[in-house]
Every structure is written in C-alpha cells, then in structure tokens.
Image 1 (cartoon, rainbow, N blue to C red):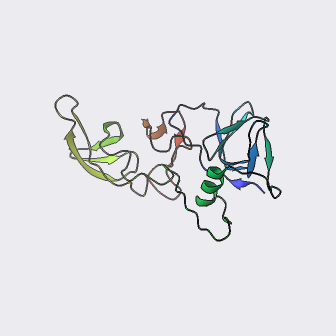
Image 2: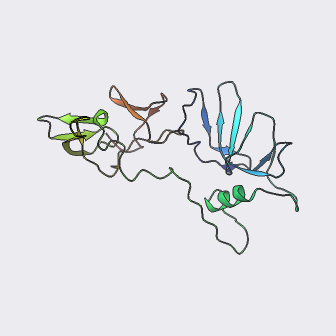
Length: 199
C-alpha cells in the first residue's frame, strides 16, 4: 500500500509539465545506495519521467531504483529518512516505545499574508486609503512605505485571511503574481481560492 507524499516544495524554477505526486512507495534504493530510504515527495513530468525526493535530501530517478512496501528483518534503513517520515506523521505506526516528532517547513500557512506590504498584491479601493489584499481577499489600510529611495503604497502587514489562495505545490506562497483577476505562482501555475471561500 503506497504512503501519502508531501508537496515537492522548492525555491527553484520548475517545468510547467511537472505534476506533484500524492502517493508513492514506502522504501526505495538504488544499486549504489548502502541502505533503504523513505520517500518524502514525488514529481512526474510530461514525458512520464518520475523523480522521488527522499527525507534525507537525496533523490531517485526514473526506473533506476528498487521499491518495497515492507522490508525483511535485518535490512538497513536510513535513520534521518525513517525518523523524519515517522515524526512528520507520514508513517503513523512509529518505532515501539518512542514518540518521534518532525515538523516539515513551509507546509503551514505563513504567519504573515504574502500580500502584506506588497504593492502588486494590493487593489486600492477609492478614495485609496483602504485596499483589498489579492492574496487573501481581506481589506486593510494602505500606507506609504519603503522610504525615499524605494517608495510605494501598499496594504499593511496582516495575518492571512480565510480566503488565502491555495499554495503552489512547488513554491507554496513565495512567488505570487497577479494576472488579471486571478493569482498565479511565478512558475505559471494558477492558484485557486480554497473551496467554499470567496474573494
């Protein structure tokens, strides 16, 4: 039975034909690896090439790896991979007698809305003292900021509203760009408002 995979978060550009995988094998290794590893995330490209990213920061590509759901006793498993997979909740049944905890970065919504202090994500409402955040839909005061050499007017810093756009599976909320009436990630993926919310 496959395991749930986390989003393949990156700060690098990604191909538009990349598709994040939601399930993958539990244990993987190549012929050159000295131990089995756990899969954190996966990507399938338009040419059907698959890449699995490991919890220890490695990766396996294409068909050049072995995959297993269960391992026989005595097989060696990467400690950082196994601990992070169990501690993150990907593997509910962890080692007996121990409670492990690992919190992956960037999965939770940001502390401050990505539209905060961002002129491009501010839609001014006449007469211009209040603006709508294009990232979350909330209304906030507009203030002058940036000093004499980088002056701009944008909404104030605020917590994300209930209408915060869904994150890009590769870049989360890092690179939001307004495109007409919609919001996209700079990699070109359209981002939708969460189900049941309105902008």
